[in-house]
Length: 315
Picture 1 (cartoon, rainbow, N blue to C red):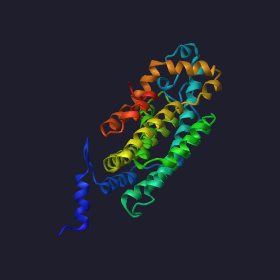
Picture 2: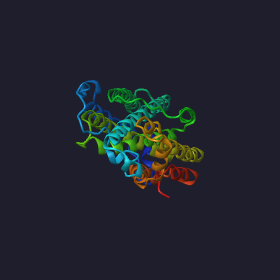
Picture 3: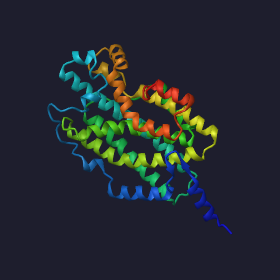
Picture 4: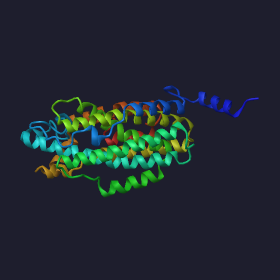
């Protein structure tokens, strides 16, 4: 007679998608927990928050600044360019806090009905602790840089409130990856860059190391959810992820940064929208994610059209 554990094992082994057999959920979480024990950081003690900023160093790589290589950028002084980079770094950190607060709520919802002593739940709680530290780290960096916080618009703030309330489980993990992978790509270019302020390099280094685990957890769970979920849920996930991509791309840099460094906001926004360099940067940052989502069946139908309209996916 086949026992219940045997049936569970058979079902687990049968889970397969376009990328192959899915790994055991508990084993994945166990490896991520072990990595967390070895490679987790306390930003308050790991970073030198009192060290003075270095003259002539940027707060964000110039090539990643939204106006880079536009006519307006070419008219700006070097001092104004560096000031814009400082404000955009603060805007991105603000966006990161907003997204991580959403992510923490989605993770708590995800584990609410899961076995509380499982590795899968233990790792989710570990990730929530990571995200708490990251949010505090980003907030401290914004204040240390002498820049304001840049919240998303009220419309997008409330749209996210609705999204995180009605999101499907696969939709939650798709949104998680959207918020993590593009910023991760940019931060991987930032932390080894010696042109950048040491504090910013330290912040991005911590975030990259710890986010690598979060991305692995979300990718593995999203694959599992897309295989197991009913057809309606998969379709809703495609649409909601496309709308999330559209909101994310619009919110990526708060337009107030342009006014705060003495630029005409309307002109700056228009030039960013028309910038081939900026479009290439955003699509390059999203490519690893969009390739993955395409392979597992997320980028289809109306959802794919929304991703294209966001500018993160080429036509």
